[in-house]
Image 1 (cartoon, rainbow, N blue to C red):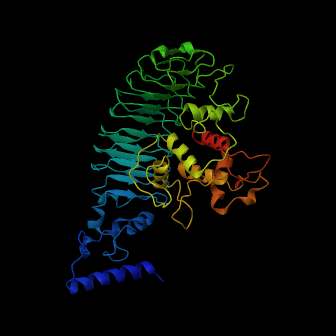
Image 2: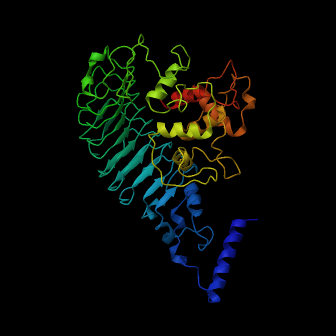
Image 3: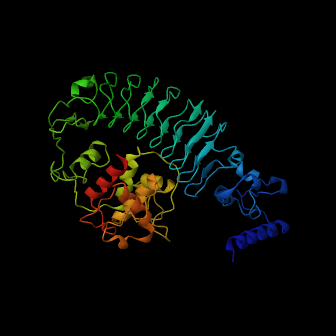
Length: 470
């Protein structure tokens, strides 16, 4: 029995009865009058058609997409719907926000959507992208696709661009003067051209093939991550606000190859253990093998297997340890709200205005925004068959892996867990994620065991975050 159709017919009948009886609709109620020539269903196809049909109000007949309804929609989220194309998207003429993460899109054309301010299509299969005349676009997330090039013109308002994990070999962003955040990590970039970016605060260009990079026209940079490239020198003399520099694993042979370091806010980094200044935290990640950076945690030692992971998390402001103590608590458990907060910080603490559905997540808590962000991006859906998130519940290893898998995406061979003796203890909903994590080394096991349902420790959680996202 199709209860949705029965409910729709019942509501339509009740509304009609109210009209016939002359009973006024409640204040603020807008009745939509559907007409036959409003039907644009034929312009849509596949899973996108199904997703849009779900948006139609009860006043529209079943299996019909109404042009009048679609043209008024300002925010559209069709993530995780296995969508291969967005045929019909041209009817969303007032669209301001488009989110289509974790689908199977191979191409996307959003020319002349002048109202768009935010586009997020990460973790698809995009090879062709055209975005022209998007004069109000401020946020563009294309991470986790197959782009070797893309056409984005007339987007001078763009403030945040994420093209991490694509196939780019060259990129020129000089046409985006308003950029504040740029992430081009994990491509094959040999050339990155910056313009006059007086507002840029964060630049991530790690894991590429860059041999040179000119950042002197981005004087407001506070965070510069260029590790795992082929840089032989870099000039930071104009970066007066620079607080964090990660330049590990390049072709620099000494700190002297970093020109102008003394001009930045990284002012106490000369060789040795001193890397704190003025009561604020400044990071410097050059660290040759014979130099040990001392962390402010009494329970972390440089011989610990998790030392480098905790160092990364502390320098990168992911965690400051156990509140009110000088301890990190590497063997302490992690709650679901704490882990989502870690993820949110790694993502740059994006502000979201969307709400969530969880009745146990109050407003105004440190985890409220991170949980809303994770829910909006389908990283978490909460506790199955409830309206609860359980923020104080301790998170398990398989729950962490599942959230990371939803955030990053990816597939792995079916035999990826064969080497673990307890592979049959993985929860059915976590199998694909655990295969993915084991295959790429995010989770490495303990003496041949996955321990999927064990509570994760803080050290384990930070290690998995580093392996997945650093």
